Length: 54
View (cartoon, rainbow, N blue to C red):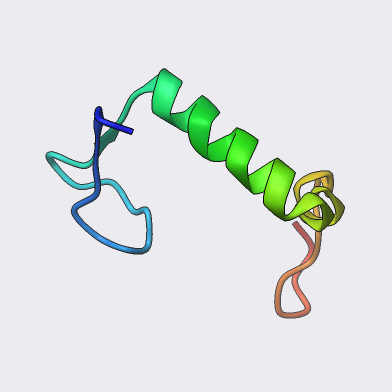
C-alpha cells in the first residue's frame, strides 16, 4: 500500500488523508481473508444507535 496516508486513526476527513482505490482493494482482501466474520457486520444495511431509529 504505497498510495495511502492517514492523518488520523478515526477516518474523519482531513486534508492530506488519502487512500487509493488499489490500496482499498488490498486492505479489503486482507480483511476478508483474515477476518471473514467481518461480513456479519458489513452486511448490516441499517441499525439503531442509542435507542434512536436510523
